[in-house]
Image (tube, rainbow, N blue to C red; front, side, top):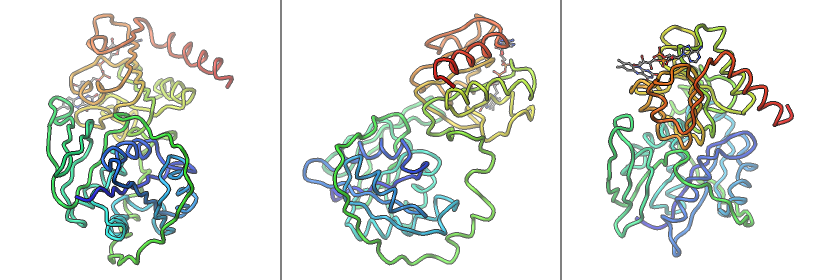
Length: 328
Ligand SMILES: Cc1cc2nc3c(=O)[nH]c(=O)nc-3n(C[C@H](O)[C@H](O)[C@H](O)COP(=O)(O)OP(=O)(O)OC[C@H]3O[C@@H](n4cnc5c(N)ncnc54)[C@H](O)[C@@H]3O)c2cc1C
């Protein structure tokens, strides 16, 4: 593996997702002093987003202006990423392990004929490749693997690594190579818009804060209390399976064994008992706060802070206080 590492930028707002900035930090370590990190970003505002790479300290960037990629499934980018990796002579491609990054990792493993892994929480550069650790089986076990070979693709778990913070460097945009788009590259966009089922606000996978609600909310209408607190905090909304099974909210926001795994900086569990199937999806969160009227609920065993009391009194008060402090 050469020590040229390509980082694929995930668009977010006007710039790049936090998970991409974290991947840049890991890529720097993987490249080492004699290596080089190169950015890649595709989509309608790719050239503008290339600046976000430069601000994070990655000056060499391949921006691919391609309007058809807007709202296309992440895997659609794979032919372009593989072509860029070939043209810069990359030995590894790194991505943030969000839905975007994980999807693309799988496609790149096939298209770029690479050794690949998703969701690394530890990455060590070795002579022959990378040694990675990552949670498996819903977080109940940790796998240690060596990724070896001339081409490696790796996504890193969101919030497991610090974000690269520059210093900012001048941008050197590298023209993208010619891409041989397969006929089906954009076909899936008509059936699978990436935002389908997603609540407004940040996506669950890479949100810094997740506010999740459970059966204790009592009804679909009262679940709005969770969304109001999430809105005040700028957080993503999650739910237990009791909520999604009841049809109060879509299954796309379910956290746990049969839902999403999240690892935000802050996870607030409201009216959630803490069944093991829920815990495996969120215990790697940095700080866990639980609100539950039952002081013996299992959720308190994993919580860093607990509020024992009636959520219908506590949550509106908390939301009001957050709004007051934030001046909203
Ligand atoms: C194969 C399998 C896979 C599963 N996968 C998942 C999964 O991915 N995700 C998941 O979440 N679950 C999953 N489950 C279901 C899981 O076992 C639990 O049934 C579910 O997590 C319970 O959801 P809950 O905590 O919202 O509800 P409950 O367990 O009913 O808990 C509700 C909580 O609300 C509290 N409460 C009630 N009223 C108030 C109030 N006024 N104020 C404050 N607190 C209050 C109660 O004290 C209680 O602790 C799975 C189960 C199986 C068998």
